[in-house]
Image (cartoon, rainbow, N blue to C red; front, side, top):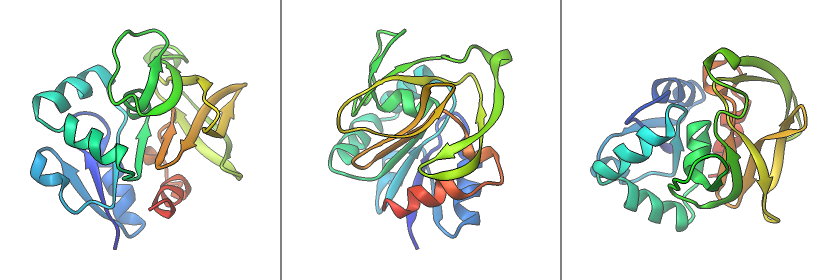
Length: 186
């Protein structure tokens, strides 16, 4: 059984844990350094990227996670998690892990009232339900980045090496395919 750590300092971690358990993975909440032991993968959930980055640093989780990602641990970032992984943030001077060769626009689809649900293609899978909640989008992707999904011409999911990101929240749907795709990366 694959053991996936879900960063549980802020955001939609409970929904990711429930999805992982439903598809047969062990989901471990990450709140302290000891929780990082024995992981096969890591999820950085949606929420508020600035708060998550601050809490990860304060709790002493940032540097070990940064090393684990750099060493090839599979990581999946949804929404705020995508912002945490991005090398560049178009409308914010802060940088977090800066591991994935993407430029992200925070709140690219607008604020909370701009939230919506679409159906689209993800990694060749048709009609994937995609809830966008104060969602960012990828405005630029480096040469080694594979675009997995677009919505209205904007990049909403991508993969580079051990990293997967989505601007949308599949963890709040009944559609298991994006999480199964991530588990196949392990």
